Image 1: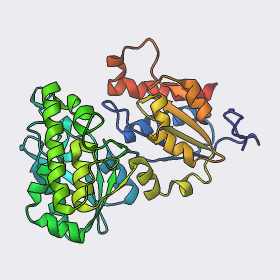
Image 2: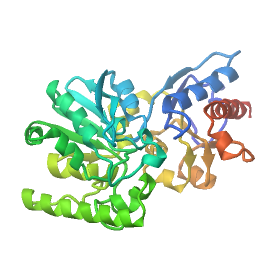
Image 3: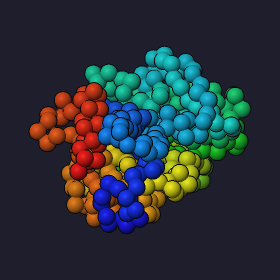
Image 4: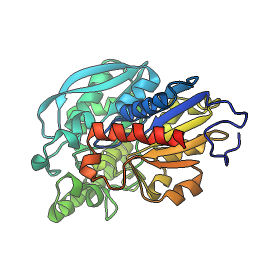
Amino acid sequence: MDRKNDGLRLMDGAGYKKIIIACDSYKGCLSSREVNEAIASGLKEWNADDVAPEIITLEMSDGGEGMLDAFLSAMKGERVKIHAHDALMRWIEAEYGIVDDTAIIEIAQTAGLALIEPEQRNPMKATSWGVGEMIMNAYRRGVRHFIVGLGGSATSDCGIGMLKAMGDDWKKIRQECSFVLASDVTNPLCGENGAAHVFAPQKGADAKMVQMLDDRARMFAEVSAKHFGYDRSEAPGAGAAGGLGYAFLQYFNAEARPGAELLLEKIEVDVLIQNADLVITGEGHSDRQTLMGKLPQRILEHVTNQKIWLVSGGVSDRKAMLDAGFDRVVQVTPEEMPLDEAMKPEVARNNIIKAIREQFAL
């Protein structure tokens, strides 16, 4: 197929036979599954009187919001519900997944910022204790391998709460278990690019609290380095999820991987798209940062002869996206529509369906 030919039909005149839809969530609006389903609906409405192509939807996540659902959908695992604590030590019902002997842990299930009311957010008090509870529950079930999604945390405690929840069992877990971290964050633990300075303000910290959190993180790293004889506080990803990345790297010798790429590997995306005619990906807003390892760019790297469209809520630099290799760049939100209106789930869904129908009518 000629990648430069942006027609909606293949060169032999036949319609698309196989379309892959693999979009990230439109954060704060629609989940990955909901975005994919809206695009599929637009395709089906356009194609109602034609021979329908095979449409495959793939739930996506970069390790943050929706990570558990995406990995369980891809790996066909079991969902486990437990009672645990949120970041303010309130009892909640949380979920994690089990696939064979591997647990899928989305830390936002317990330590998530979305679980805390805006007026209650305080990273000086917020704890990752609930993450430790999820890991301990899976460990006691016999799980020895963990995939941990680091994203959307309310905490900046460097994983201290998680370690405390494990008690002395953290030593056995260190010896018996392996951890892979799914995260696109590459920040170190401390300093101006660290967990406190970069991420704590959005979790409710003022300037004084940011400095206190950074000092606390540095002190914890110094004590930990003396204990182990090595220091992972400067490792890429140590600053993820308020320093939870550091705790996993320092205490459990975790391996850090880009979340989107880890998921694409698990679903064997190269095999799935091999015979596809068109791949559609997207996210809530696309700009130059999209090309710095975000999900759409990761999917673009796997595309060879297929056409690939970028379908996003908003687009800031269309030319950069086209130059990077996307065959078509579609903004689903009308320019004149206010953001608060566009963020309403039903409005966003209708915007997606309308945009897809219009693209195929070109």
